[in-house]
Length: 98
Image 1 (cartoon, rainbow, N blue to C red):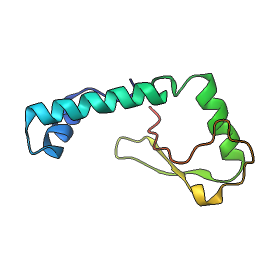
Image 2 (spheres, rainbow, N blue to C red):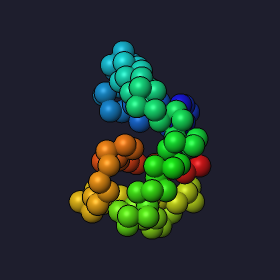
Image 3 (spheres, one colour):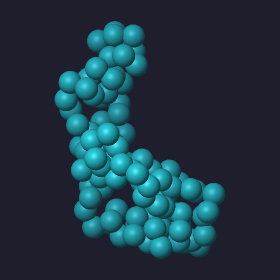
Image 4 (spheres, helix red, strand yellow):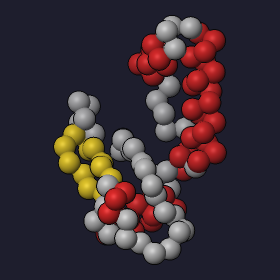
């Protein structure tokens, strides 16, 4: 699913719902469903790669810096929208490239 299902993730969801297991479990399940419905499970496969590459050539995506884990941080400035077609249009994305 692209979301690391580890202790840190579970703790983050528990903290977000004041350590209420039922609420945090529902929130995590909703997140996983949204990621699946939106197609984030296939993010590193062909279609997403092509879309990001196209958007990158327009100057709206750039990589600056690294996370504490050494992963590159990708930023996107949607206000620089300059593509004319609607296929694959990205309005916001937050990706940690593993």
